Image (tube, rainbow over all chains, first blue to last red; front, side, top):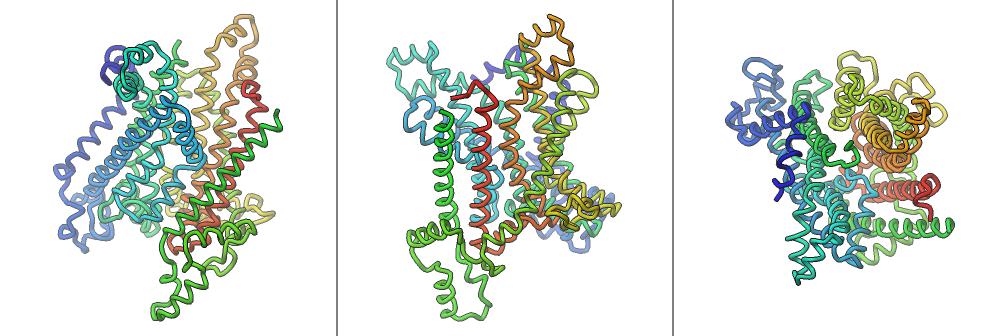
Amino acid sequence: MIMKWFKNELLVEFFEDKMAVIGLVIFALLGILALAPSIFTYQNPYDLTQLFLENSFQAPNPNFILGTDEQGRDIYSAMLYGLRISLYVGLASTILSVIIGYTLGLISGYYGGWVDTIIMRIADIQLSFPAILIALIIMALWGEGVGKIIIAITVVNWVYYARTARGVVLSEKEKDYAQSARALGMSNFGIIFGEILPNTTAPIIVIATVRIANAIILEATLSFLGLGVPITEPSLGSLIANGYQVLFSGYWWASVFPGVLLMVLIISINLIGDRMRDIMNPRLKR
Amino acid sequence: MMFKYILNRLFHSAIVMFVISFVVFFIMFKAGDPVQLLLPPDATQQDVIEMRHALGIDQSFIKQYQAFLVNVSKGNLGNSFVYGQPALNVVFERLPATLELSVIAMIVSILLGVPLGIIASIRPRAWYSRAIMFLSLAGISIPVFWTGMVLVLFFSVMTGWLPSSGRGEIYLFTSAFTWDGFKHLIMPVLTLSFFQLALILRLTRTGMMEVLMQDYIKLAVAKGVPRKVVVYYHALKNSLIPLITVIGIQFGQLVAFTIVTETIFAWPGTGKLIIDSIQNLDRPIVVAYLLVISFIFVAINFIVDVLYTFIDPRVRV
């Protein structure tokens, strides 16, 4: 049902924009690297027996093309494994928040009344706070960890999907197809998830694409502040944080290269997201 | 009617603050015991019990929350475990540095973002529009801490042109008026405003493009109103309305992101304070910070809501 939306004109329109295609290609390449980092690297950064202290702080050279950190960790290898963690956190937290936010938004918009009031009040209060502050407090209470940060980001992000889903449902439920489904005696559950849901996926997909980038930035920022993913299973953010501590000693490669990769990753996602948003925005149509 | 609306919003804000106070307290109640950190390693069990009693954390949740509410109403949030001074004082002492950074960053973002957004909207396909849009893409894609790091690398580590930490010389509550202070401000402000600038730029551009496509604009052009008047008067006026809400909300974001900026540049404000206090489990400071910051956000939201009704006649009650 999702494909129905993206077939024909929309897909064609997407590929008309060169930058969006470049974004898609880069993202696909990074995705392949992140899926199987062991194929493309010569060191497993998790395996402490492969790290040798005499290799610490080597500048980029033929043996370690992007240099090493203080534990002799090869920056290039660590970056690919870090890319995997960053993408994993970004995708997992986005999928979780879509499921939770979408469901709550659909219910809220369909039923209205006090259910709607409670869910949307919580959303309102939460939205008046910057995401980073909420996530920071959760992580400060809970401690570091990949699973924990996914949940923290989900707690922050469900609101955006809930609001969008609610708005779409409010207009969809009055349309003929939803009304006739009700007249035919379909259950509320069936109408919400069988009829309305397939017709409201487009705006959610657009938001989700943009928010994946936000989730990855949020994870990296928290890791940079020491409240995210520990350096023992580093994400790009924790690699940058780790490298930043020795930046003033002149070991720039330990933080700069992971930072560049993070930047490229986010730009590629934003290029895709931007294009999708433009295509979906009816007010920009001539 | 207007008066009633404002009262209504005030009441709403008060409820939000109450909810927040409960959440903040609950969080800190669950956050763990600071006593172990505060006492020397050779402290006896008796010392621990006395310390817990002195801090009032040996009582039940309800009792503690009651005491907390009474104290909040008196403006007393307890003494910082680390600094030994009233927590609110510690936070207020550092608030000017944080607000200075946020306000200057916001001014810079608006002064650069709005004009660049207008330029990029008038001829969206021109090379300079594309250049501006690429810059803004970088702005929203580059994490704040990464901008700060790159600046430090270039201007402190490699060239030594700008100081990488501290606030410098202060004159009239701000470092903006002394040369030394100004030099200390440049990098933190750039770091903080890069993202905002890009966001404001993009919103201005989208808003302008949407408005420029409206029929009344086409009509104005068709009947011979000079293009400059159409763009800078009719179109700009209408696309600035949504921008005001965004700027209000984004100011909150800026204040929040001072946590990152202040950590990088060792800026002596509340952002660095909260990170230090989280690490030291300094409960009163964390509570005081969250309450003060929440109050600022709630106040901003209130002001934006009320202002909006003045600016946009469509939502007038």
